[in-house]
Image 1 (cartoon, rainbow, N blue to C red):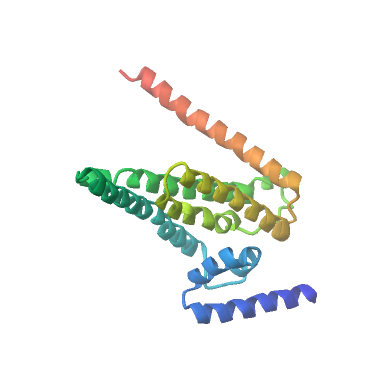
Image 2: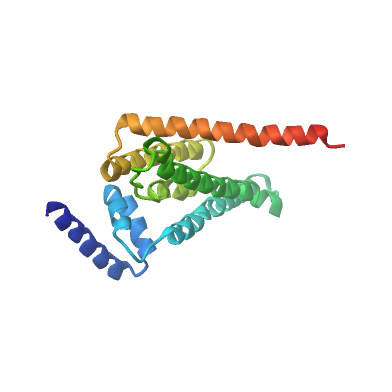
Length: 219
């Protein structure tokens, strides 16, 4: 009964917030930054949101990185103009923006791949009596990391340090969510990370090994 009451409270609170903010995706942002431990249950209990909405949210947030990089380069160009009386060309203004954006897109795909692995890797251990865990937990937990692209307004290495802090913080959020929603212990979380690293290393070795073999036998 207490659990049902808690869920009703979450749904009621979520509906109020959706009305006040308009877009449910904005509510997820509000939850993850101001009520991070509530955000996961809020997402699970919100029928109007799905995986596609999370993808869109991450893609929009990933644009913060190239935009911030362009603003940073523009500020450097203005300072350079007043100091040296030289005008920066367009390539200097947009330098690094596309690279940073592709890195963030790659990280989003990587995190989603880790989420899929998390959902299914225990099925191999438990067999038929498998109860699937809540999906999308890592993709919700790593919203702050995608938003960390705004730190590229700052100079290097400060921006890289803050991005690394954001990544560690998102790992912590994800662990807390798995602990609350799926009864993950410290050992379970470390086991998941280790098994995912082994699987990813094995998969990468197969891809690069196949590529090298094909390149060798290719006339």
